[in-house]
Image (cartoon, rainbow, N blue to C red; front, side, top):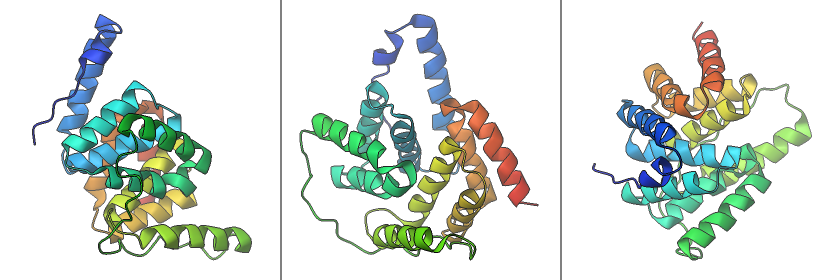
Length: 213
């Protein structure tokens, strides 16, 4: 699929940095094993988790539209991210999206088949917290517009950005594998994220290696 990113908005900031950014973006676009749509989900999760809601967010929303996503699908990404990235961060992302989209598709109810089952929680998780999280997950993973694989990959991405690389990372990696993402897909996911924070990806690769035994 051919895409047309307005990279001039980055290049104009600083010529040398612009060249670096374009090179990094080219590497990300070349990472195999993930669809363009899945790559857009990674970039949007990064924007939300790290508060990058200016030019990067606009560029990634634009890329999502070019990849064939509707505004309602883009909104569903934010809904899914809420308990993982944090509700305050998602509120800000919705505010910015509304400004950018001028309210497009903001009241349409999603339709279609549900995604699938949420990740399993370990038995030793605090009961009250486990109940809250289970309710949060069941109200999302049973919604349409995103697949179970996409929802699981989004959770893995948030774990990397927040460095929650213990039990949450394990549960989400297992959910991703159950939804059809193999070990190489997960490694490609982390490679894709390299431009977004090399140190965090380094730590995540070590955690993935540990899970692989």
